[in-house]
Image 1 (spheres, helix red, strand yellow):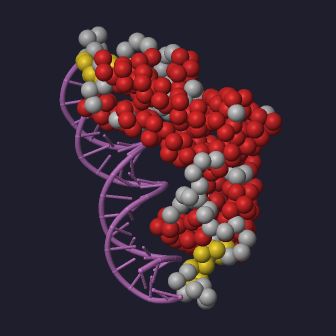
Image 2 (image 1 turned 90 degrees about the vertical axis):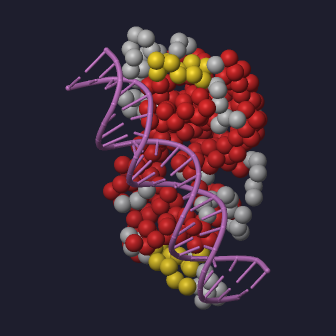
Image 3 (image 1 turned 90 degrees about the horizontal axis):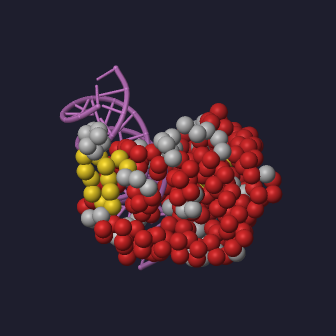
Length: 153
Length: 153
DNA sequence: TATTGTTATACTCTATAACTATA
DNA sequence: TATAGTTATAGAGTATAACAATA
């Protein structure tokens, strides 16, 4: 994972102008950084995002949670399976609509979510530190704009 | 791929603070945008990046090209297979070191690379347009910093 | 012994199709 | 008929292990 070769400068000039390349490798770097931060909690970033969505407001069905995260329902089945296996969430049949599984955090799930979120935030702050606070905030805002602009389904 | 559900605002507030989520979904959006732009050339973004690296300087072996792109050599085998199948590159045994395959662009490969790069640049410019020129430049620079900072192998 | 290319293999992430139970 | 959850399956993308040719 790097141009440990010879003329890395020319390569950076070449690839550093490609948005796709930069996004991909920034993501890889972040994963290297945040992964170890979350490992003590037995979670990865996607699972934590599920916990965060479930903890946010009213109880959600699997499908609602999937839509919020932008994954499809078959992916959510596996995510909830994993989280339930760890004792962090519980499924129960909705009584208003018995097709739906309402997914709720357990006591332990609430605790793990809170602690893991702290760890994630710290890891992201550390990862963004080379930018300085102002540029880091600008980066986040720019990404928010780009994820909201064109085709909303 | 969206919170077409109900309270999308709360979700955006929640997920819009997660760098990993923003990077991932920005990348997905970019792919939706750039994919169609490259399709007429019969390429995807990764293949174009290979062509760009090969066109940049002196002829490279597969391993050198792989290192520059941050993929491993087994991945590069498949990439070169695909590009060679399209007649865009040619392999030849290096005469100084007969273990090496030197990969070079064909005439057609040079033409396709140039045109596809123009299309890619136009697509990225369009994608970044909502930011304005200044913030777009800031975003690119921030990502460059983040991909170069911590652990260089 | 080490390196380059290659193949085979496996693992992750994701999506599609089809089934079930409910509505 | 349509929806929610599930399963099976398949397709990318990537990485590891092992092999042949070469150094």
